[in-house]
Image 1 (cartoon, one colour):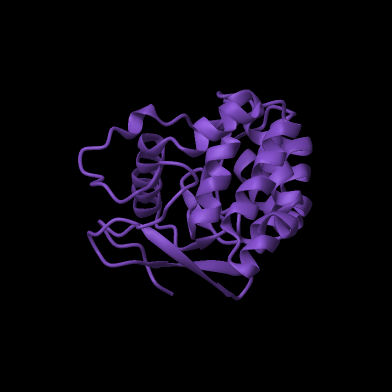
Image 2 (cartoon, rainbow, N blue to C red; image 1 turned 90 degrees about the vertical axis):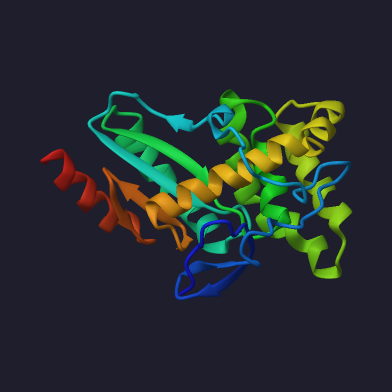
Length: 228
């Protein structure tokens, strides 16, 4: 298992053991990943103000238990969690006021970053709905990538954005926002280093890190935290 090193921006992911493990590029170089349009991450990430990034939160901000999910839009295990775990968590714990849920993106590759830019394009109100659509359509979205068709991946992501009611002009502006991309990359790196994130999906439950698990095991942990 490789850990994220300070100054290393993630470029790749490797499938293994029910989770995707993070590897890093050359330390201190920053990621060299071009987005559609003008945005890229080649410029220096020094002195980036990550306080401008909005935390994406569901549930009562004063809920007794806090759950943070670290996940990547290109991780199949994250897509499975989005299908089997997160809906039950939302129904039984978030919607009932027991859990505050925070979603934080992990970047294995450019496609995951594009997904993040699209998911955040409509603001917090549309973020979780778009995230759900991206995970449900993961195979279709990533299919063009098998032929090296980056434009095809971007087009599939734009389709998701349009379903969420965002017009093409706004979607293109979001994808081309190089400053936002650089800030997201540094924000991700800071979060992952602080919380020791080296695979996805990973969960921080009231400050304790847990790896991917099924809903039954997850609910047992939450019930213990809640004293139920």
